[in-house]
Length: 424
Image (tube, rainbow, N blue to C red; front, side):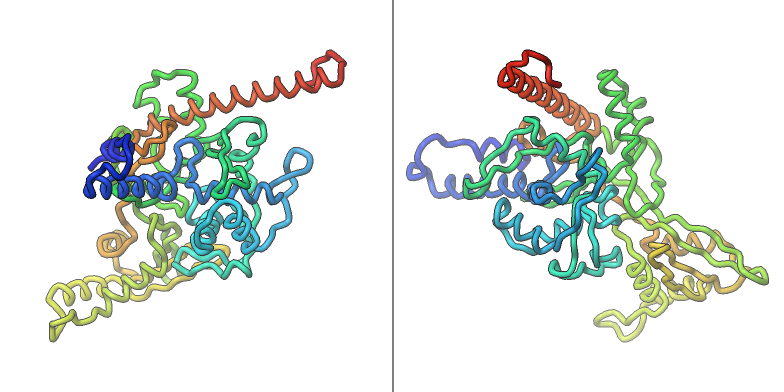
């Protein structure tokens, strides 16, 4: 069942529920639930790139004074306990569990999860090896400087507000994003019958593509993809898929890219050398790579078997023939540093590299699924061009509304002061 069918069925039926057959009522109720998950939790908005919980966290923090202020907005606020932020979000805007809200806050503070973290976190916010963040009573948070691009014009009539869950507060339907954050930070989510996997992109490349489309709406796909050639993952890595595969994924809104780690060769004394991995593909961690090496070199007998299979034995011999030792030297100064020592200095560098790429997560596939909630409120899989064009339309609306708000404010101020002069 596609998303259009979901939307059509969820909106049908003008009579009372008492007049509906049980099967029709159950179907409509489930579809309404599915839509609430799709639009209310799992999928980002193409306008500001945020899911509802993320939007509510950012808005609540701005109202708590946790952004940048002072001259030119360059003075950072003093961070507060994350528990205080979560409590404010739950009490005013997001009547769900505290774990869900805190997990969303943590993710927005992780530089290995988001290309441009929206929250400046202080304390233990986890690691890419899967270590969890400290409890919310220990960590502190404030808004990152880049978040001003999402929130700066929110009080200038740029977006619509709606009542919160109990009608006591007002919350924004969208944030007046000055850049398409759906592409900058990407998104990942699974809804009912729909999913999204939007990769992150480089800010300058996205901005250049937007400017080019504004100046020339009929810009060709080749020219657009030359400005925005591919994703830019937060953890690094290099895309090895051909440009045609990337272009096809951007045109259709769905595809898969091959991404591999980045490495360097360090020369040691007496002709020795070692392979050092400095960047990893998305979804891969140093811990995961070490576990894979351990499984290859020290395989366990499979359930129901009495000995190792010939494939396990052969793979073990292949890896041990080229690899002597592996260790994780990652630290604060080097977020990723995995050292592989060859069996001997006579081992070919390409031989070791190709063996590791073939049998570990140093080379993986990264999916692309550009599904998001459009300006019309419908969750649709979009092309890259459609996402950019919709954001440009949204941005033009916010600029128009901001200008009207400023003119109205100046007119009121001029009339009340009886000065009759322009105030802006």
